[in-house]
Length: 312
Ligand SMILES: Nc1ncnc2c1ncn2[C@@H]1O[C@H](COP(=O)(O)OP(=O)(O)OP(=O)(O)O)[C@@H](O)[C@H]1O
Image (cartoon, rainbow, N blue to C red; front, top):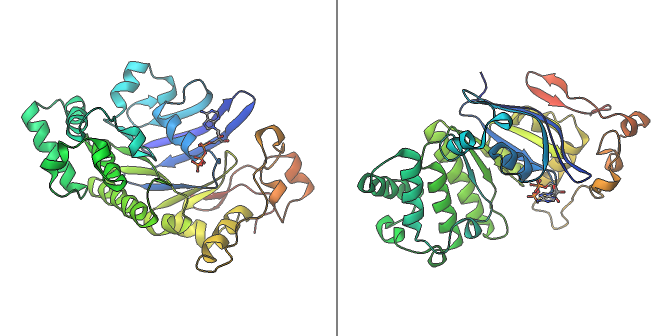
């Protein structure tokens, strides 16, 4: 049985359909990469799972094992799940940590709240967590305020807070501009190593397909709020059927060249979205049908699926 099953998740803001019938499954202990260009809806999926989308209109279902449909839970029940069974690591740790409290106060409070430990045990657990996320001299760091730590160190603290209660599912947004590229990769690897060591599952928002292919079990490729291809990393990347996945892949293959090749064109605006396949405006293989009807997800092999009327 899956740990998480998202079915036909649709999110609207005003007249814009931000997510359109997104379905995906996560098994226990599985690491899933969400990839796609900026604005594809990756963060919206993670935020919808945490039920932190504010005033957006949401339909479909998000079933978590032993908890039922998260979208149907009462808020107090959802509060109990956050931190304990579901945790989220945000892109920008600097903004997510409270500047007015020491790192220790924030980590110890997460440990106490989620594990119900007394002060002394919670402190010992906090030291242990800081060590696990690779922070040297954890006792000293616990009494520091967030601004006294580097961006990479702040992100490690966020990982420690997210892991404090051994959640079943970790949602992580790849740290972007705030950190330099080597530190970003270190943090991604740290998060994946820690989730694997705990047998937890992870949904990782990644911009980098190469990193997804090295570090995750499955990949979900999103385009303009729709899943265009998904499945085990090797199947999707070695036998990509959707033209968009192929274009993303060719961008990766071109890395190292001076003239980086990006997919041509831009994602259509929400006001101007084609009625059929949303990729039709940029697709070299588009046919009449693609403009009129949205292609359903078809099975390629096993759990490898793609949504295209004219696949490669
Ligand atoms: N609070 C909001 N209000 C209005 N529109 C929003 C809000 N949050 C996101 N959107 C819109 O929803 C769409 C999806 O955004 P989302 O952040 O989920 O994409 P993403 O794939 O995670 O992008 P990135 O890689 O840049 O983080 C975008 O068009 C964005 O402008």
